[in-house]
Image 1 (cartoon, rainbow, N blue to C red):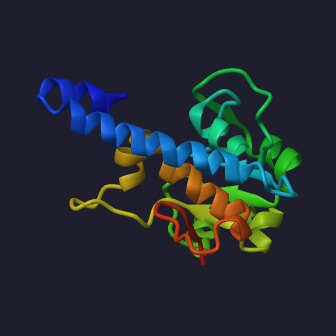
Image 2: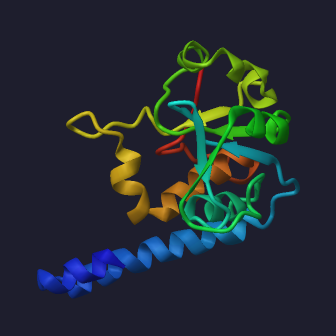
Image 3: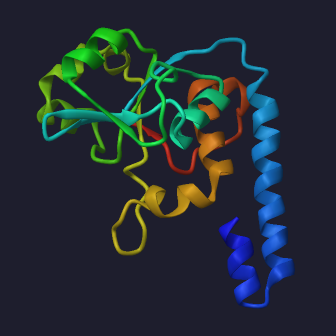
Length: 182
């Protein structure tokens, strides 16, 4: 809805309303498409930072998008919109067999991950190379574009996650933010 505010401030209400409507339409059509998924793969999110594993709480927008994309986010039952701060052992116990892993933006390769923490290799998603990150898409000044654009373009984020979890539903779509780590 920020686009509507800026449209009002700059006298571009009509243009802002059209942009908002287009984003809303894409988001809603992707929601309908995601409901056609025949499986609900399990998802691990986040990773370690300074000895603590950070991942989205169950009612955060990140968690909501994972669920709406047809995934089974393993911490969906937690309350709150911020981040959980857990030990590695707690995460390993619950998510060692997760089908997919969506990391934070701190890694751009599987090698970087195991260099930071060799224990990441214990996860099934890592072993199967089903690890995805948004770290590869950079802005003009080198910042990770996801942090700047994703909150304003949930339609793109949702499509990316649907493509990741259920590629058969979007066969001709190329993800914008998320990339499979190699």
